Image: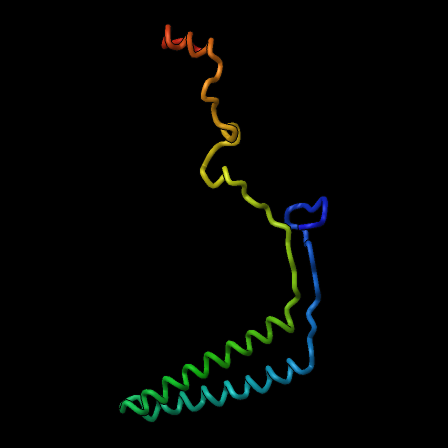
Amino acid sequence: MSSKGSNYGDIHRYEPARESTAATVAIVLLTLVEVAFVAVFAYGLVTGWGVDPVGNMYLGFLLAAIFIDLSFVLLLYRKEFLPDVMIVKKRRRKWEDLYVREDQVDGESAFGDVSEQFKKAIYPYYEK
């Protein structure tokens, strides 16, 4: 994030969608192919193609083709018709992942205040 003074939730980058005509034509054609695959799959289910092994493999191929075609439609739509937006988000610090409170970030000194340690050693109920 190179911009200075970004607040959390601000839009950092916004590029509008291209909305190309070629992508629109491709999505329409892929949708027509999708409808044809779904129609043949539904016809195969109704007429009982799944009873014999070859028909069952054919239905499986049709179902795979339906989902692959749908993935291409969604990929084209996402790439060509949705804007590219980057939003500034809050990054968690490493000590927050360890459930450490903010006042414990620096930890405790191994030596600390020697006089306080001496007082605690002599009188265990000593409070600061």
